[in-house]
Image (tube, rainbow, N blue to C red; front, side):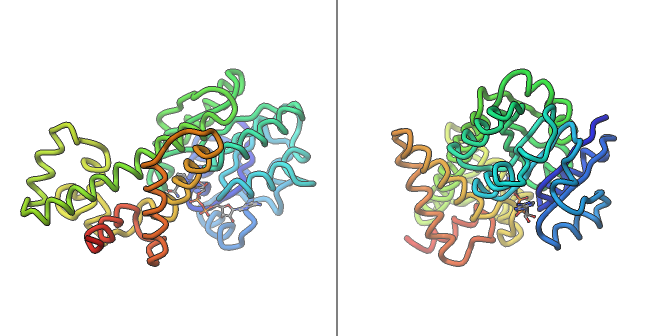
Length: 296
Ligand code: NAD
């Protein structure tokens, strides 16, 4: 069993760290925010007084932070992780961040002689609690082999996507498909309603026809056809519109930087910007169907 430092004990980090603890690892956690520390303490996680104390002597350190700037600060600033951990520590960043920052932090870690993985996840808070996350992992084979048994305590699928940053690349591409497909499915229900086609009938047909996709069959944006979808609980998140917008912006930024042509991805980002500006940041991302229905 390993000694593990865990930095960032928010909605995702707390249950992930808890899974590591339940698997028998010695976990020490740290978060800058007092409410996150209190919630982590209440969940039974051993806490350290500061980041250095959480990671000193650890065989592996996991980070689960909001955005690229936080990851850069935690790893690279004076007194940050790269100065605080021992030379054999494996570093695993599970945050969803921009590719450029992910690769820059990998480079700094590598220059310091550290093994590092970018390992963003999908599956949400429910998946983190149940230990059924999917990890999309970027880094070299040796680091992946070291990280795999630890990630297995938190996830069901661990997919090696290639070299440094490729975990973020995979996550960004997947969520661009998700954002675009959620809008497409929402538009189909909006159009069906206008032309007199019942929502359940549309669902029954499309779910067995060529328009079938996850946004329809697992996360249907209108109430009724999929009882577990947020549409049946007034679009309480789930996966917030703000998170979807964040991921679509990451994809748009990467497309601009790399010269990739992603017009639907960019348009999806613009529609989620509009939806969030309507005060819906905290709603589930499937609630965008309400904006589309109202806009016609
Ligand atoms: P969150 O805001 O609940 O948690 C992030 C935590 O990091 C906060 O508690 C914050 O105080 C802490 N933090 C920030 N700076 C810190 C520092 N310098 N030192 C220590 N702690 C610091 O966010 P979350 O929902 O847990 O998401 C974390 C990451 O996972 C994000 O990148 C998000 O995009 C991604 N993600 C979230 C979900 C989801 O459903 N919530 C799903 C997949 C991926």
